[in-house]
Length: 123
Image 1 (cartoon, rainbow, N blue to C red):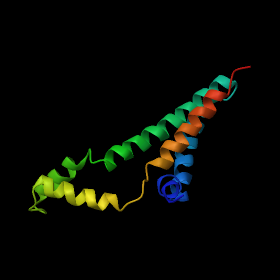
Image 2 (image 1 turned 60 degrees about the vertical axis):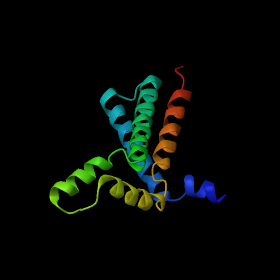
Image 3 (image 1 turned 120 degrees about the vertical axis):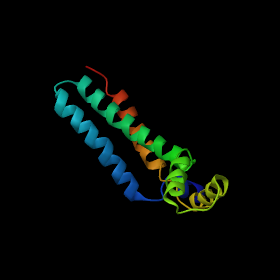
Image 4 (image 1 turned 120 degrees about the horizontal axis):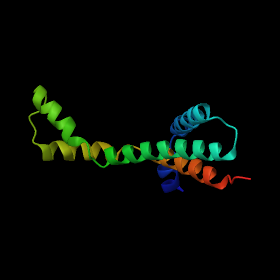
């Protein structure tokens, strides 16, 4: 139960934000294409879900350290660090290990929107 809480249900605020992101993009697609047929609803829900899921994957890649070189280079050029990159990376890895998995609500909500969009079948 502790793993489930840490991995999926650690912060309801992130779920609300994910629903607002996916719902906002879905509404934007509906307003631009029109809500006249079920195909448009499928497109809108799938688009909103894909954007939310991709945002979650972007957060996952940032958590895994894909963008650390940019933060290190900005600090190095600004003269705010004397560490080498490996020490900077290890320090950030320890900070991230104490944080919650903030990427999972976005991936979960995105997949729910995508599945909902795919389950709506044209009549």
